[in-house]
Image (tube, rainbow, N blue to C red):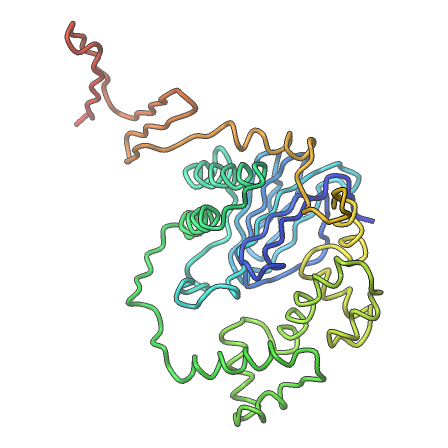
Length: 355
């Protein structure tokens, strides 16, 4: 059983919202691949990140950015370690295509620490801190969270330039894909096949298969299973129906199949997900449920993200100026610092670059 002691989940998927954040002590020992952007930040312990390009041991306060469609695995360095990790997912399937750009070239998988990709690390850590602060305050302001989410995407994109002019034209090909998606969203509880979708839309099966693979990055069968499991979340969390019944009601052949897909998406079995969610629910005097909130231990784990902000004010090849709390930190290479004082203006700091 996974460690659920400090489990927390803000799942935007429950509202059709692309941004999700979770805190957990899971150890994922299987490779996964998704179309979303994933950022994992180690709050406690050590985790080993394994990708097709590299493996790296993440220490406390290190993070890794996982690009969409990159195969990866993230597990505890020691099986019995009491590690805790914070994970953010930005699900592009819940955003308009025109807001996304080219997922295959727009992002890259990278480790970000105090010494590796430091600029991105500082900026992402600050934004994660802003998001944590928003959740701690229980305001969950939609527009503020939208700003944080888009800034995270901009930082994680490695500043890859992607112009609006580079977006694909709104072609018949794209329109046909949207027709297929809408049909699936309306009929996913049925015994749906790729051939049935193609037949209903007057497309060939091979053409429909190419549409799905091109725009979702995964085969039709897997996409359909993901849609079914995501749609079942509300019923699952209500806790009235068995896993077997939920699976059958939402088009999965068995509780085993449902559990396998659920674990792929969320890294945890559905029964444990529901149990912890209900454990974190509080009830008012009128027996009305209140949303899952961060508890004292979770807030303490996140506190440094909220309080230890660091802002890059200026940077070039020889000079960087950063704001850390109320302090300004200057880093200079091959340069000269001159300090002038004048009664009327106080102290003036002049920095000259060596020629």
